[in-house]
Amino acid sequence: MADTILIIDFGSQVTQLIARRLRETGVYTEILPCTTAPDNIAAAAPNGIILSGGPNSVALADTPRAPQIVFDLGVPILGICYGQQTMCAQLGGRVEPGTSREFGRAELEITENSALFDGVWSQHSRHSVWMSHGDHVAALPDGFRVVATSAGAPYAVVEDAARHYYGVQFHPEVVHTEGGADLLRQFALGICGCSGSWSMAAYRQRAVAAIRNQVGPARVICGLSGGVDSSVAAVLIHEAIGDQLTCVFVDHGLLRAGEAEEVVRLFGDHYNIPLVHVDASDMFLDRLAGISDPEQKRKIIGASFIEVFDAEASKIADAKFLAQGTLYPDVIESISAAGGDAVTIKSHHNVGGLPDDMALELVEPLRELFKDEVRDLGRELGLPETLVGRHPFPGPGLAIRIPGDITPEKLDILRAADAVYLDAIRKAGLYDDIWQAFAVLLPVKTVGVMGDARSYEYVCALRAVTSSDGMTADSYGFDHAFLSHVATRIVNEVKGVNRVVYDVTSKPPGTIEWE
Image 1 (tube, rainbow, N blue to C red):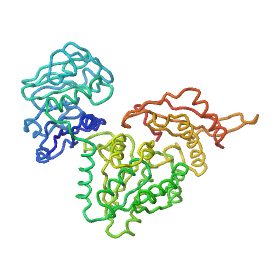
Image 2 (cartoon, one colour; image 1 turned 45 degrees about the vertical axis):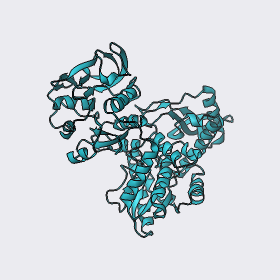
Image 3 (cartoon, one colour; image 1 turned 120 degrees about the horizontal axis):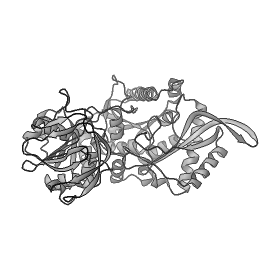
Image 4 (cartoon, rainbow, N blue to C red; image 1 turned 90 degrees about the vertical axis):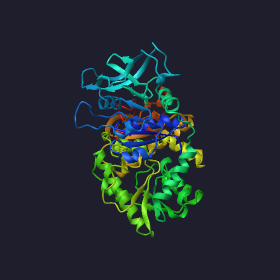
């Protein structure tokens, strides 16, 4: 069996980042909720266990705890933030609430050498780390000692070297912690003894086997959008079950210019995967008429997709499964990925927007992956770079790029503005430098002067971000001359827009999409 690190999830928004960092080192990881049955944890036979952060307080009696089996297996343990606190509390230490909070960057001082720091940090050095805690460890269990401190966390890093138990108050998984990825690597490879031999090819093999096991002889329909996620999911599932797969492409009337034609050409002609093209734009737009609340939009779109998929599935004998290209950022923003207590940020149409009574069971082979990992999997499957390198496009389409109510007129304006924007980015050679770029049509009209006449038209907002995983993002630093050029093109070429603005908000506090 391959080397394995288990992550016990307490509901952190960034739990999957831990898995990501470990996969980058070639270590297979599984995320299990803190409510997982002890036998299932033991059956995984992990080389080590990581206890994630979480939004709760260990100082309260009814908050989650690590299953006792975690401490009975005799493997190395790394507790992160809440994970450190519950480990210490469960082993006989004490956690105090709310006395020394730290949020954001903090300076960590290494006071003692530790196996956790080998090859990463040296004694008496100082490092910038990312903290996010209101509680802190106030007394250590027997056998533990302090090896690093910060201003707000006198027990910032602790260890029981004899049992190979380690606890850190900060988050090594986020990019803001200097050397955090190296610290996780040292835990997995240096302390747990993992070989670091896992690869995306191994993930492909495991996913194919899991799909075959789940589906059996039944048929699967795949909700295909033509984006990277659904395309990779479709090709992966087709590799697993062949002609048992039928792709259903639903044109909901919220696509970008020329998108429907491109999807039909790629999958109907190039991949030779059975494809059903359903034009349901009238149904979607009728149901969205007058709806301005973004959560309601997403849920209407999700439920309408399922209605169409159920109808198409009824035409296919033995169709029992719906396949989707759901990714981890979609899951964690909609609901905790592994049964923890993560807070809902926004319901994604293919997660929080699904009805409880849908007839089809879900197949989601990409559910634990980030966007860049999906791209790597697509390359592993032989998909062309023109598809693999496409910017993300949300399942609800342009519906969440028009704050307020949606009309055919607004959709036409936005399609035209978005096409001009992306064309300018491609011509400037910037497309591959940007994670995601798109236009937003604001529910605002402003006065302008066009041809010596007064205009009163919509404002278009431009958005472009850099990111590695979609969980965090920064606005792309366009040259002002480029933005001026794009604004001029949009105002001149798109009837209905007389003003253009650029969104410089990072994620967090914002999200990448506007709704």
